[in-house]
Image (tube, rainbow, N blue to C red; front, side, top):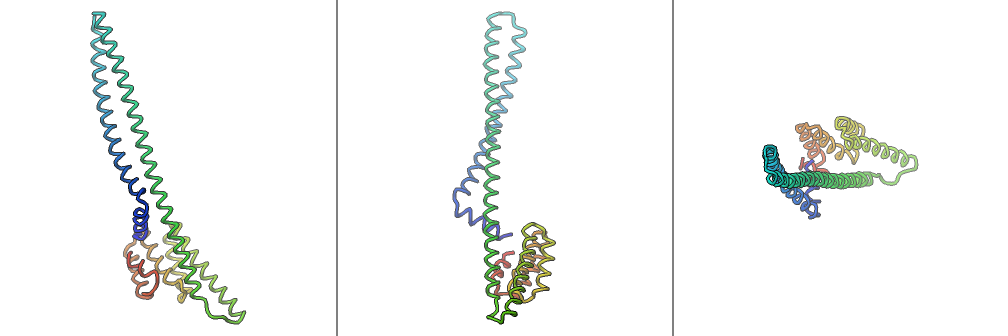
Length: 230
C-alpha cells in the first residue's frame, strides 16, 4: 500500500492546487468553526437580554418606557434573526467544505487506481511478449498460443479478485496460478500480488514472507523494487 501512498504524494506534488486546496479547506474549517462558536455565544447573550427586557416590559407602567423597551426588544429580535442566519451560512460553508474535500480525495484515489491498472496491464503484456517462444510448426504454435492464453486468463482472473477486494480468493487464485504455471513469466507478478493480498487482509507477517519469497526466487523481476517497499 505504500505504492499508493507514494503515488498520492507524487500527484499532490505535481498538482499544487490539490495540496493548496487541502490547506485552504482546513483553514476555512477552522475559521468557520470559530465563527459558529462566536455566533452561538452572541445569540446566547442576546437571548438573555431579550428575556430580561420582556420581564421588564411586563412589569412596566410608564407608557414611554414600555414603548422604548418594545423598540429595544424588536431590535434584539432582529439581531437574533441575523445571528441565526449567520449560523445557517456557517453550517452551509462547513457542508460545502466537507463535500469539496471528499471530491478531492475521490478524484486522487481514482487517478491512482487508473495509473496502477495501466501499469499492471503494461507489465503483463510485456511479460507475455517476452515469454513467446521462437517460431514453431503450426500445431506447436497453436498449442503454445493456447497455453499463453490460458495463463493470461488465469492470471487476470486472480488479479480481478484482488481489484475487487476479495483478498483471500486472490491469494488462493494466485497460488493456484503458480502451481499450474510455475515457469510463467508472470510468476513473479503472481507472487507479488499474493503479498499485497495478505497486506490487504492486514496479515503483514504473511505479506512480508511472500515478498521475501519473490526477492529470493526472482531478484531481477521488475516487481522486486515494489516488493522491497512492502
